Image (tube, rainbow, N blue to C red; front, side, top):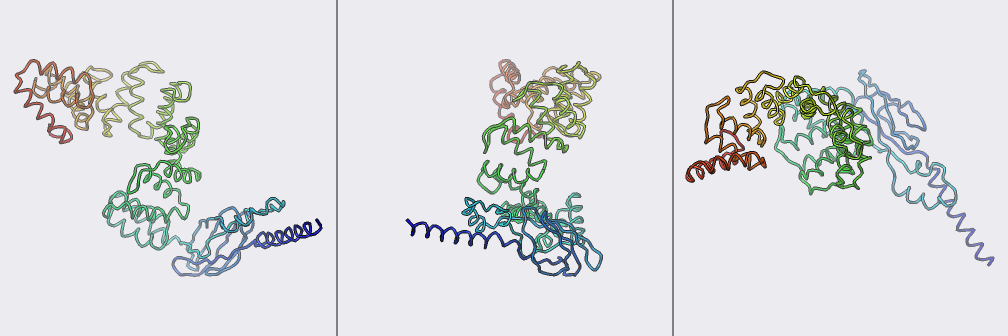
Length: 446
């Protein structure tokens, strides 16, 4: 018995000594250099300590859970601000866990944190180059933008890495290459760049160059959303709402949508409008629906403008106002939103909120019909059938009603069958072939 106690005592002492070796390792080495090779100085700090350092240099810094923030200036008076991410040293964390039962928990996980040893701080000279590349991208001068982003990305500038990934993903300024897009996104994500984390989520959600994987998509959206990136909050909410890659949870979805909407992310505002209008997981509330739709609509979001128009047209949650309905349909229609184009054509067709004008009605119906909108295709067929805004043309009425029926419009099917019964079989078969050709041409030049 005495021997057993003695052995246990030795084991405990040995364990405590091992723990001390881990716990007392408070500091980690950090090397810092400027991207342009110049010298200067920085103030770096985390939640544990602050340092004034010369650059380039190497020194020991206090481990901490928080990122290491820096504010620097070179001898040429160029500045740089940013942060160096804190991460967990897996081996030390695993070893530390053994000793938690002994009550030695003094910042045990914090002392398992570390920072990258070698760090390049990018001065604003390179940020200025990036801004020129961003301007070229925004102006659709994609090859010029690619030429700017590539060397910056190679040198580790996170914004350039993400943008280069986007250009490979979309095939702008270079050939589309999902594999290269993912490569650059991952490099940026390693620096905890939320835009890149979000973009990786997009790649997995839609299966761009990878197998579609909603669980992986949710993982990356969450990393980005945790950094308050509004787009990621919205897309993560969508996955919660529909139970894709995550257990379905409408309440978590609404919470995330609201976080994104508070940052004026229009798609989240629109999604909240849909939720409150239809009562998905909440009590139906037309006032809240209109509020969120209006926020998105006033930012120019066409689907929200169309929904506001429908609420005014039908008098849902408010007094009917045909003039306001027409105004909102017009705003969305002029942005090329097909459903609003069809609705705006409908307003002209019957003189609701605008003067009766068959020519304008045909114009807007046709624009929407050529995008594949079945409702507009049926209305356009009826205009040809009745000679409103166009000459009466039974053949074109058949063509567009057949196309509308193909796209699931029940009225289109009824009109097509009505016309077909009143024309020779050979003629209807010929027009059917023309309609199929129209569908195959994506409704252009029908």
